[in-house]
Length: 216
Image (cartoon, rainbow, N blue to C red; front, side, top):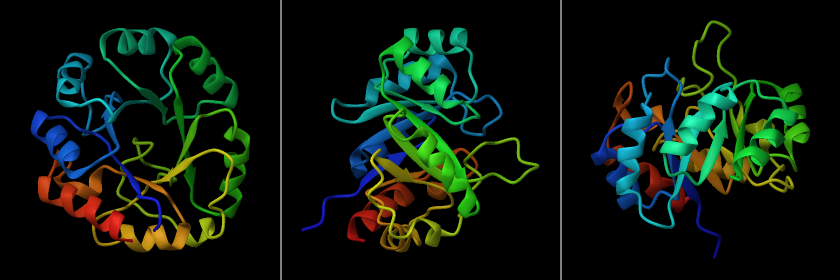
């Protein structure tokens, strides 16, 4: 029997949404500290939200080109299991963050065409995990969470990268199973695809997404 797909629900901002993600069987829950995002959570807010996360579910902080001072405050005040770097952080910066905080790091990589895949090799073996996301439009202020897919055929046959990875970008309950079949992904990440308004998660959509991912 195939290994169970791991699901990350990102951009959680309310206790009931955290509980919905946990109850649905999410393996990771993400808190977005990027102020321009409709899914932004303050440090105090995220700290309170982690109270609803049981042992065994990884708590992930999403940061975008943050300084040491910004990350210091987040790590000091929010009990976390992982950091997700979703900006233009270099491989050297990823390694520095890992050393400084002693936490596993997920590095997001935006993909729109085949040449974008070269970045995966640059970060492989440095980041603990990679998040393969749709590259944002040039005029977007958000590095992710734009609800846009990319051509999943670009990842076909590449399921054996040496660094664990998860698929993101425009996933929803209706297309996640197909995306998994096309890419061979063992992990998937979703934010806007389980919302009924920007930043507002829907418990039924979360449940449907996890179920669809695991039926793939």
